[in-house]
Amino acid sequence: MSSAASGRTRRAADVQGILVLHLHAHLPFVHHPEHEHFLEEDWLYEAITETYIPLLSRLEVLADEGIPFRISMTLSPPLVQMLRNDLLCARYERRLDALCELAEREVERTRHEPAFHKTARFYRDHFFHTRWLWHERYRRDLVGAFRALQDRSCLEIVTCGATHGFLPLMQPRPELVRAQVAVAVAHYRRHFGRDPFGIWLPECGYYPGLDWVLAEENLRYFFVDTHGITDATPRTRHGPYVPIFTPSGVAAFGRDPESSEQVWSAELGYPGDFDYRDFYRDIGFDLDWEYVRPYVQPDGQRKSTGFKYHRITGETDRKEPWDWEVAFRRAEEHAANFVFNRERQFEHLNSALGGRTPVVVAPYDAELFGHWWFEGPVFLEHVIRRAAQQPHFRLGTCSDYLQENPTNQVATPPMCSWGAGGYAGVWLDGSNDWIYRHLLYAGKRMVELAEREPSSPLEKRALDQAARELLLAQSSDWAFIMKTGTMVDYAVRRTTEHVSNFLRLDEEIRNRRIDENWLGWLEFRNAIFPEIDYRIYRS
Image (tube, rainbow, N blue to C red; front, side):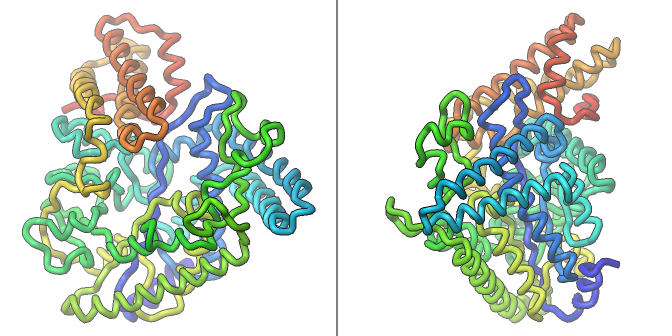
């Protein structure tokens, strides 16, 4: 038995509640072999360097030291596919080499600037260590490293929608919802060697009846925002601090607003502290073009390099130098404050819940820790360390809670999400509502195609690729980007391309005139879910 598991067993009867720290790691599938450099692929490379490797390395240290902890994490299917894509891994290694080269140059450039030289040396050590971890410790397989932490009982990995599609807006076509869930579960089984216990519904999007789809795949729990519990029918007795069982028997866990605000809030949250690294100031924009040219886009477009020398400072453009040692100490102080607040919270909940064991669910986007908030992994490490030293609660997972508390109220959450406004407004408004008539029409055609029996191996390949194109078009990321106004052209292009690809495949399949060369290109470029079977869409 691992140290984490033994610690969990030893303390289960002694503590007064469970804190569920959940990190939701997801990126849309971006894979452009037709371009040598593609800006949107940087989303993955930045997340690997700034979030996934730092989190992995710190969690491994804690596990190796025998610190008892259990946290949970989503690794969405598109992210897993990209992390195991040979081309993207090779391109990431090229990115790492460039970072290490630039780090050496930065140490030389700042040698007469004491305010920045210390930070340049920090970056050199940091990026060289990251490269060592990628090659020597993780052997280019971060998914395997996360799986190893799960096998040590320190981490519980949950699944997600196959391509992070917003399920409430697929409700008119139940087959589309079932496919998003079933493909995700099969994908999880393929990469993690077991069935998932839980699922992160994309955008925490739930509608009444969705739980029956989850039950069909033997999923035990899902997450909703606070009002998914507080507005459930019948009225729940304990708010978001005790889960509910939906009519299908699948449990719903609600987000705790207090712990969320302390980390998420732009005004009140820890990441806004003036000592922390400023996200936006980067030498890719600040320094002379000729100096940074090898490290930005070949077409001349400037971009972030990861070398940021300034702290948030305040509401001013005159940013002060960032001191990583001061910032890391601040992260440790904030971790102590976070744990202190949770202790007081559990004290209150134990007096208020009438003997029920409370659970505080604190979910965050994983990319907050390291990418947006550079000091976030340090904060998380010290939260785990301090949580292990106090008697009021322990770190656990939703499945831990259900195992120890098998009886819960039955209720049905309303339609809800964790987006702004709490419902579907982010993914269905004037900026993006045009996509749904196309997605639902394509879904109707896919359900019809699913009833076919292929007349040849080529037709089977085309049917499977049609399923992939539909899934990729359904990603909630595209509607979200259209709503927020960032990279809109790319989001529109991805939606229209996948729908167009699907419609052409649909026509070629029905006419039995499949362009094998074009199909092969699609299979290479949109290489997600190699094991998919189009029959998943059968009614």
